[in-house]
Length: 345
Ligand SMILES: Cc1cc2nc3c(=O)[nH]c(=O)nc-3n(C[C@H](O)[C@H](O)[C@H](O)COP(=O)(O)OP(=O)(O)OC[C@H]3O[C@@H](n4cnc5c(N)ncnc54)[C@H](O)[C@@H]3O)c2cc1C
Image (cartoon, rainbow, N blue to C red; front, side):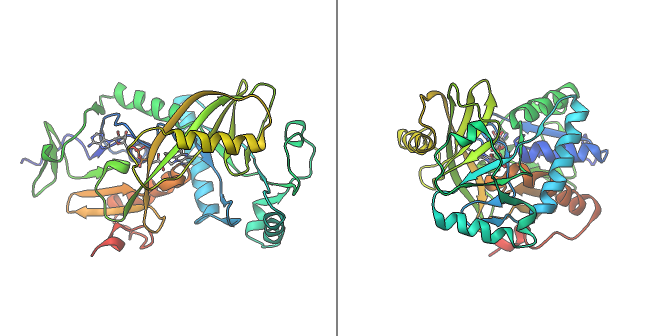
């Protein structure tokens, strides 16, 4: 193969990983080409888009919460400015305590200097929230956000298409030609290929986790904040809410299930004693990892992976893209905590 490259980087997959990576590379002046096919079960298309720095089951901060949150907020705000849209929407999250014990743990964590910067008891009056059952009270996480993932993917897709940098095609492994100097797919060649195929990629350490959720209409509820009580309820405006999501490790490609629908509605109705109309039932497969950290780095002389975003892809993707670019473009060391090499035999 000649070394007359058509691009600096070829990317396979335009979910969150491929979108954020290609935008980051473009910001650094690189010529990118993205291949993407809308495969059933892809994660980003159904991601609720919630950014929450606290793991609610244990009331502990998520991995590198402050750093991830700061980088994510800056990235999505900036991308929105570039496309004249708003992707990052600050949205406080209210946690309704299911037991006295959970209320006690929350109270305890407030006194921790790090966690205490993110959580507090919610004693303010809010008509919509005050009407929900909450014998043990509620807490609030102010620095949460909602990212309009679908709008962001569509906006970036339009941007790539306008520059002839997107090809709608499922790339089979036999179509990737590897040579001494780089990779070629059809007539396109680059010194580097990054696999961003999410749950469809065969990546060391990858774990596929199915998630299902519902879009519902609940007239008269009027929630202005996101709420969690066994399930997340995200207000989308006009009495519409997204409710989810489930976690399942078996039969991940089986599509929407009655079992998940019942589970979600049951949890929702423990919280909201109102008429609920189901508008949509969605599902996808999260590309998680064995140790719940992203999976980044080189898997060959001219290939790399960006995967393992799990259930927190929105907040993790911008940091991961920066870190991977620093590594691939500038030769910076890759953090062992996220390196694909940690899963080497
Ligand atoms: C129900 C549900 C709710 C979620 N809610 C949230 C949330 O609220 N907040 C949050 O942070 N995260 C959430 N997530 C997780 C989030 O969706 C993922 O972390 C993230 O979307 C993963 O992005 P990805 O780009 O790695 O994978 P994907 O989004 O699956 O993207 C991979 C893309 O590559 C394409 N592709 C794959 N192989 C090929 C090929 N060979 N050729 C061409 N194209 C290919 C696929 O079709 C797809 O478009 C949720 C996930 C699910 C399932």
